[in-house]
Amino acid sequence: MARSRAGNETGELGSGIARRAGAFLEINYAGASKDKRIARDLAISPSMAKQLRGGRGWTPARFDQLMALAPGFRDFVFPPASELDARLDRLADRFERLADELAELRAELRADRNEIRADIAGLRDDVRNLRGA
Image 1: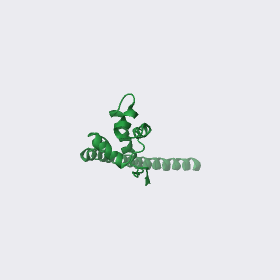
Image 2 (image 1 turned 60 degrees about the vertical axis):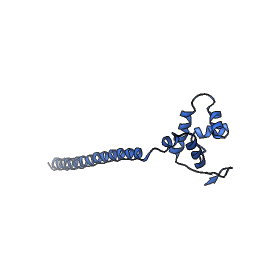
Image 3 (image 1 turned 90 degrees about the vertical axis):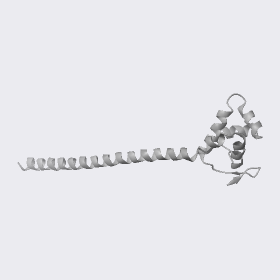
Image 4 (image 1 turned 180 degrees about the vertical axis):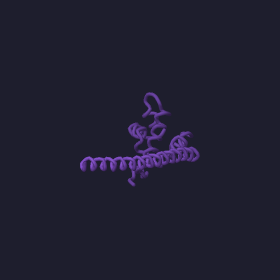
């Protein structure tokens, strides 16, 4: 993990987390001069504010700073576990339905394959009979 000038650890935070954090800034600092307003509130440069809005440059210390400054930040960036559990349950249900559909398709393909093989065998017999006649 690399270190920034202030000694804060920087690294590959989950890109989804960093994007949500940037989106939070976009939503809560809408309008003109947003980078200047973010910079003032976070005591950073406007160019750093622009990077944060783009989902880059986030550090654990910066997350802590925003959590102290904006009460809704934590739930926006890190959804509650119950919400994640519900999303995971919905995904599990969808995967289960897909697995069932795939199993049905496989069974149909096997049946079709057997019918096609029988048809081919019948055609071979017909060709042999025609050649022998």
